[in-house]
Length: 458
Image (cartoon, rainbow, N blue to C red; front, side, top):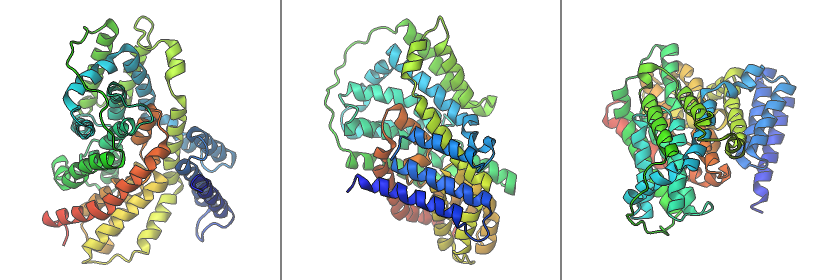
């Protein structure tokens, strides 16, 4: 019976997609209804994994173009995204980290510091992820950097690929780099979209310090604690290898070159606000050097055999769905409808906080997390007018929403981490659902209390 459930859900979303084409909602033109149908169909396949993820993405491209649902620039927009090229480069760097032995060396070093207990391993990974979030502006970059190292560390600790320990360590990287970073202004793509749209639409300039004070205590610190506790509780394991202090061999020629390359990339990632070079192009430059004849950190054969090109197609599809939702006006229709039925009124700050947060979180199911601020920020002025809540406060409520991850496919960095570790995205669904429940029923109320203590809500 359990095996049939995903197929039933996928069939249901397919029927719903067809119904949207044949019986579009009143006031929805073909552009919106057809885009909705394609998004529902694709998300149904991705969420249930009844077909391989890359195949779901290919079907999205095919149907989008066959039925002219949107221009090619929208359907294939994922291939133009810097996020995709960052992932592509990261996969190459990951191969280099494994081939040269640098990953095993770093894993050995980490094993001596964070491996007293399984709890210490998971906590150490999340701590490193959060600290990197302050200096590296992209969750994708951080995942690309850490996943090969953590995989090597898992192997060093005796965790097999199918074990709870291996999965827990990978998810500590994936969620530890994505969720707590919502509380740090320049540390995530959704945050950056929020900054850009707030400035361009409303002329509101968000400040690092006030943003950190408002969001990091709950969305950053408490979510980091939540990630550690949930992983240790839901995927328990014990260390199977005792780490003895032995002397390490000197760095090889390849390890030395790769170490210098990674340190240079890290320095450029950390200072992008100065030189304004995208993290994607920094990573791609490092990947090209790895592939260069004479350097040969990743020979041509290893590039063909080891790089998972299915991940690239999948990510392009995910990003394309988000852009389709935004470009077609679907997101505007849904969010406006949801907020229109909510009955926002002045002097109900707590209710407004809950509505905006939950609507934003729900929107991520079809637009993915980076698409939420692109859709919600333009509506913030109307929400502020209806509720009497200051515009900047409404914008901050949207952050609470997009910091709630319900399913893995909503967050490209999480998907990238899973694909780099060769873990099916469906395996992470349970953890994401439980973390979403904790976020909604425990952390959102705590966040509301924190905002009240700061005097933002009445």
